[in-house]
Image (cartoon, rainbow over all chains, first blue to last red; front, side):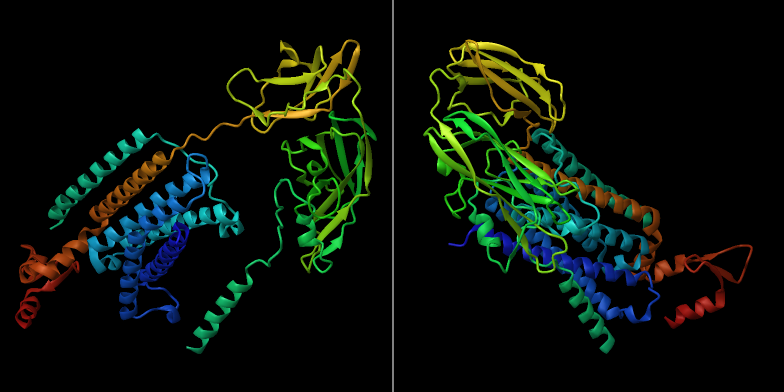
Length: 199
Length: 366
């Protein structure tokens, strides 16, 4: 019988690997809108197209696998979020990471490959992927702290405050979920209007 | 191409060498009840250890009545440690290697120097290389001669071979005498609570035997002035002692004096803190909060992007739209006729004047 911890390890490796690839490819895609001065590091149009597709595929794979990684991690964990701030934070950072990566995928699909030809939107997309990757790395770092008592974040000159958290009641969380859904729907509806205006 | 391969290989080699070398437990092992084999198995091998330069001494009474509490102080002087100055200190009943904890010889640890009940604790040495640890222990109930040892393990600096330093004290013999009749002491069933609850009056219950009165002095750790605690007798040998509550990691020391008539016995100083604030998270709360964060972040990001589209992306969108769908119709809308400049058209995309003839030729070419 294979335990949840084994599935968790496999899923986390897939998620981290694909999202790392996605982040690197996303950063390289800035060349579509901003020319870098070093000629040796300039990629061809064909390579940049491939990187954009790799970034999107990596992000989609990461977003699809992330709920599985969270679920198996929940099953495999020794403690519960009730008595462990690190574990509680692991949930929260997983949520942030999922939110950022889902938004990344949505925005890329929404505007298509032309997104990279606009300087502002491409920089925004890169910043989004960096924020998403920071959240993902934080989740992985908490995992390292829980299992081995150390993580690669320990060598950084700063430390994300993972030993502190903000607890909000389930009722307020549900209210926030509702507000979130309403704001997403209203934003998407207003977008249609703005595009009509632009056209 | 060759340069790229060399650069890639250099990056990979640098990353591989940037990982730290493997050492046993450089940050310490944590307090626990451990046999001497914990130090012996890892560090007893001469190829993995060196002798510590620390001078270890044990300070304890030579005669103790059986079943009574006493304090044992282990002093370590002139010890050379690693940068983090952590020293692991064992209190042992023997140095057999296993089954050598004080509890294996009838001793009972009531409190260690870090507030727990472990025979192995970790302390940080001072800059001049001295460190001490104390244990409050209850002596064995059987009289006789007993031994106690102290052992230390720590890192050293410089330490190119990643060795651990290991030191063991001389044997310290203690004579356990039969307890005199009616000797006032703490009950064998009494254990110092780890912490007091945040709620309530901060009082602790003390159990004694052969005692008709107790007095309790208390002081903040590091202070020298003693205060007298209020006592309430609950029953025979059961007392309620009111000690002020502390905040955070602060602790107070207290000393119980047991009386039987005019005869009194001062028990060793012990310390106690107050329970830290309880974390009030729940599993379902964590899941819902994570989901709410995900949705809020998603909504926030797409709303920001919408804003970026409306303020900066409009030209791009209209350009794409014209190129993609509208074609000729939009192309004609691009060129604006101006009454003041006959024969010229204003290109609203390129933002320049274009001769009308050239523009019409271009269209016919298309």
